[in-house]
Image (cartoon, rainbow, N blue to C red; front, side, top):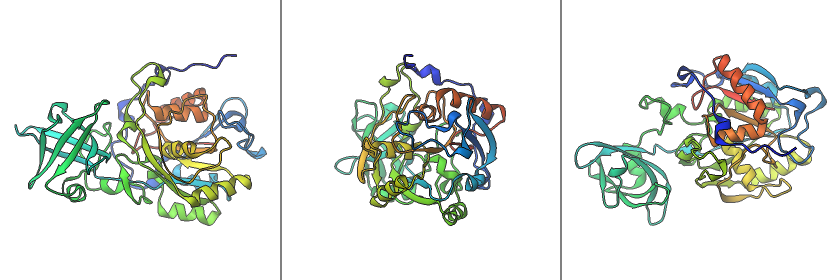
Length: 367
């Protein structure tokens, strides 16, 4: 039977607006967790038998969906498995200033470029034309140097260093579906407890549910925890606007695979353990850094990897993820991992049970 060709419209769904979480819960691990047990216990697209679940973990036919809370993850990850987290830190990269007319303008710094300049997004576009400046205050400006082919800008900060500018004027870059302005608590809650080096314009949101206490408990249980870095860009929120998915432009994101993670992953695989990815950012980094046998290559890299149903996963066996936007590449990745119909059934279940969606929302684990 011919393999189905998916289009962007296959990843549409209707979400009641009130299910878009606007605030985090008071307790991170109190988020709900939808446990998705795949039919037959095999990761969609894996080329080997390593992902077949243990005999006591098998299901057949339709997926099994179980309502839980995130703290229950402690009982789901067995000793000897590897939990991979993204330790990138979100920059306060949103800058709001004034044009010479006095009208407001906004710039989002995405990543460093050459000659101390930065790749950025901004609005309105007319305020970010070459040679124009946006005043942030106290003699600090954002000057546009170039308009790039993809619509992004190359800008520079005038009157202060970038670090000084972000410290004085930077705001938390909350995603566009959170319609309120940031509050001081967002600087803590739109950040994982294990965030380290600043590098991202958006949070790896599946990790927002973890606390240090839960991580310590997992370690005490015998779960191995290791980190990588993938610098999340704002393209993570960009819907696929072309009907042919392969025509969607994926912006490059930088990642770093530490030597320790590569060595631990090889040993876990040798011993028959499973690799659990905390979020789609971890999946993209691991799969991009793997060779055909599934062995990880340590070191830096860039990924434009677009994962859709039919993709053959080489590293990841289990996925912890939030619920994603319609027509998003993240929803396509989750559908590739769980299976298209399983993912659709899981989302119907989550909407019917009034789960909270997106960055500050609830989570799903696919096993």
